[in-house]
Length: 290
Image 1 (tube, rainbow, N blue to C red):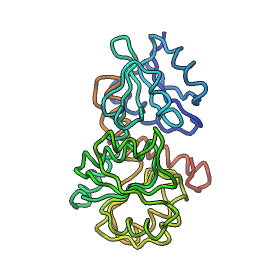
Image 2 (tube, rainbow, N blue to C red; image 1 turned 120 degrees about the vertical axis):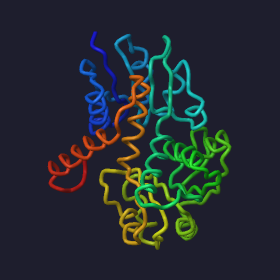
Image 3 (cartoon, rainbow, N blue to C red; image 1 turned 180 degrees about the vertical axis):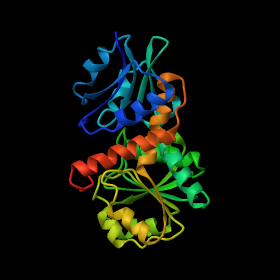
Image 4 (tube, helix red, strand yellow; image 1 turned 90 degrees about the vertical axis):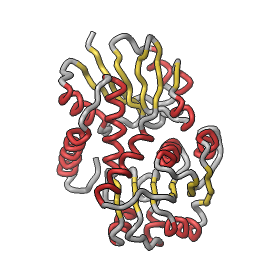
């Protein structure tokens, strides 16, 4: 049987995980593995997991499966359990184990941006959104030393929410309703780092109202299209912009380490990712979509 790893979620056809994982395998000399895109949603997830066999080496997990897959695993890493989301599954000693590398991806992307700009790490934060990636952002901010964070969202609560994750992580959260744009704008103006986990264009009302500062940091996890209105608002102010592509690369590098036991060079993964994004932009006529 051919050894394989893959990415699951829905929709999955435009996932860039194959690009960064294959780049990592190339530099590590892994030539006999396949990397697959697998269209899987919450309804088909149990049957998919049940069919995993000895040829399976690991899964990258994206929406809508990050929370749904947790109940199908034999073991879950404490960090992933606290966050309430799994984005990586590997076979370990005959069982399926779940991990969360989004936390490392977010923290590393912010560290890299601050290092490159020569600015100190942030001490206060605003997170936009209240689901799985927002929960990972809370954990990442905790790793950076930020234990009180403002979260702006349309709704809070529920077992998969950022509020439940904050309680498990021991992080304090100040809630701001997205409908109160004046309060959201005030929080965005006051914070050192803003992390947006929202889909493209959803943050546009904030971008229009916000006057960003030069000493602020933005991480918009959206990387295609890269030129969001929120990013433009921060760039006009001369603020530090952490790349969503860096989050993808660093979380992918951590996944490769879990799946292979070896650490890849993120810079080579980043180069492959940027090449693929440029290729897709050319193919789409320069519209910036995958």
